[in-house]
Length: 358
Image 1 (cartoon, rainbow, N blue to C red):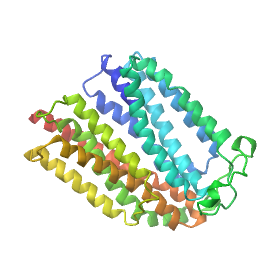
Image 2: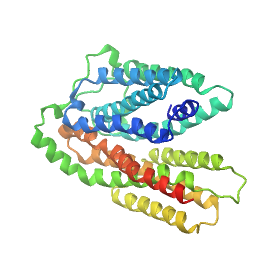
Image 3: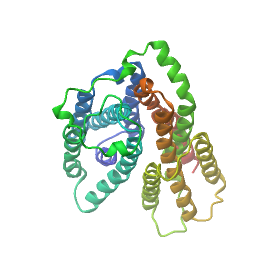
Image 4: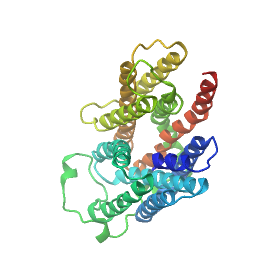
């Protein structure tokens, strides 16, 4: 949807800073929703939140597809951001009611979403569909979201054990046939208790913020500037390869929890910051001899980012008490969006500065 927004904006009389506007419209609503999550948003009933998320996703496709102005396109991006932010807070909170193994599956799904979303848009437009018709063809996705929640997802037991074997039981009923899920025991937490839990989460939140800051600093500020002339790939093709390899790395590592569990996520943050340092130095000194070496670094960047995400939430699920888990999962959601927002504040001005130098 964001790729289509850029394409449609390029055919409209958009101002020169349209990329900045799209990024702001994409990040700000999600950031606000995740800020509100620890303050009580996570206590609202789940089904209405999922319904709003699905409707906003559908509305974003329709608005951007039929947009004839920059403002309408940006409103579509805002709706997509609301859908994404509200959906992530909702489903991560919901994992508190299910076996802890679902966190690995959730992370794998979100990693696959980035890869399949980019591939589906690229494939359909390459096949000859316009951005508008490509977006309209995607309206089935929000329908599948709502159908999977109300008809496929089974209602959890009050205190679901954490083992993986229990995740295979199919005796529960779909949510559509059961009373509305009520918030867990975290609904009774006082503000003081929430603050105490949040302070305990900082050892998970800060490394994940740093990981996302470093990788989105690379993605937003450096990808377009990492251009190699001694290759058959055009500038646009190189950029697409960077994005594809990044998404592939994220998908692989978000699906790797059963193979590799990392308790000390600060090490992943340090390695990601090292990646940023190497690529920043290459911007000034051009010491990397081949684009294929950059390909490896970007694939590695995606692997670190996905591993940090899945291990952070898995560690929170393992080390947080049952009564605090629902609140903790919702509160930790702010990590990635905060890192992306901070990177945008620095990466976009740096990108413009380096462009003016060249």
